[in-house]
Amino acid sequence: MSVVVARLRALPSVQVTLAIAMLVLGFLVAAQIAGEGPRIRYSTEERSPLIETALGLQAQQEDLKAQILAIRGRIGDLEAQDPGAAESLRRLYAELEAARLSAGLVPVTGKGLAFRLEDGTQGGGIDALVSARDVRTLVEELWLAGAQAIAVNGERVVASTAVLDIGGSILVNSAYVSPPYQVTAIGPADLYDRLRASVGFVEFVQGRVEPAGLQLSVAELDSVDIPAFAGTVNLRNAKPVESVAP
Amino acid sequence: MTTPDLRAARAAALGRSNSRLAVALVAGILGVLAIGQLRGQAGVPGLSGLSSTELTQLIANLNAGNDRLRDELSDLQRQEQKLKEAHDRGQTTVGDLGTDLSRIRAWSGLTPVTGQGISILITGQIGGDGVEDLLNELRNAGAEGIAVDGVRIVTGSVVAGAPDGLSVENHAIGATFEIRAIGSPQILTGTLTRTGGVIAQVTSTYEAAQITVTPIESMTLPATERDLTLTDATPKL
Image (cartoon, rainbow over all chains, first blue to last red):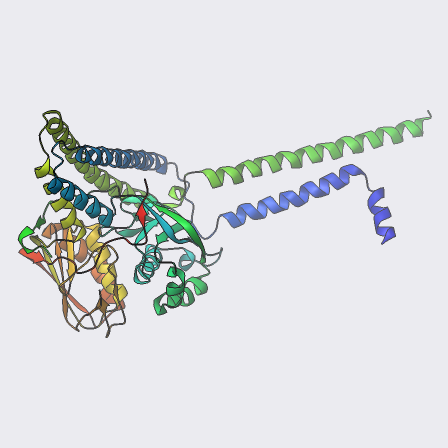
């Protein structure tokens, strides 16, 4: 042992520095290669304008959503300040607020779960990519377990929400979201226990997540914030049938 | 100092400068790699992994989504303006409140809705995942209301179960059942039935299933029987 230490001490410091630097270099190269994962990266020049267009449209979408949320807030304030604040009107306003809450048009908070779903490791092929079907399965299992509000990467899941594959990423409410996917849910205190007891969830974990090497992690949180749905609630083809109200 | 001593000193100095050069070179490469790693993590997530075709598809989706958002925004702006004017005149907005309430309740499934759309008749064995794939595609195609076997689909509704034991909202679904959706019949039919579309995919998984799509001029979908009141979530102020 003392011989080894003595030999190490005898080494010039520059060689030690070089050895450490080479070690770090090796680590970084390995990290760079591993970071590529199973996803393909395209690098052709002609894609640049398409990427710029997509980025511009994404920025527009975020701006439009922010404007919609802001204007909905102002409309709510105006309605609340109605000058003819008769009892019947106040009741109508309370109904409207309740309908907005049920419809997902109001941000909510509560106890819940936060899932993180990530691609599998390199070499797993296409099956090692998280797909829209995987995200939908997790969302469906959460609904069945009693969740009351769910969001995927900050997009509120409502009655009109579609989750679609686009390349190796997904669209939620027409918004482009990329992995890792964060699925947050508010529900009863035993939401996770109910989920783990579900045959469908167990099948999803054992039949899809584990064989494909996907990474699924979960945290039980005392406070989960779920944003309001910022999309359209306009009906173009459907008309309410008021006379047959439940 | 003798000549051999000078040579030895020069050789040692040369060795030291070579080593320094090597360290500097490695440090330089390290720096470049570290920056690459950081940029790679902070860059545009996912877009670099899309092909030109996928990017074109994404752009089409974003364009369509943004058009719908612009429509929503202009409707909301009109509504806000109307409310402001009524407020300034000291008038009540009961009519507007009622219209807003009716629209939100219809959209979320709390009241029945009527309109044109399509009927999807399904016979043969199909699993809950297959039905959910169809519903997902209907939502993507802009369906404004959906019912499965007479049960309105709302936030939280899931069609689940094996092919011979499907259910939705505690309602058992029979071997032959119908999905009805309100929306543009052309768009809904076109999206579902396109080559390689969702019906082709579902029937390749569930070979015994037969799926027929028929446009309908007018239909009524019932209100949900599900209680949509949130008990575990509270508004975030």
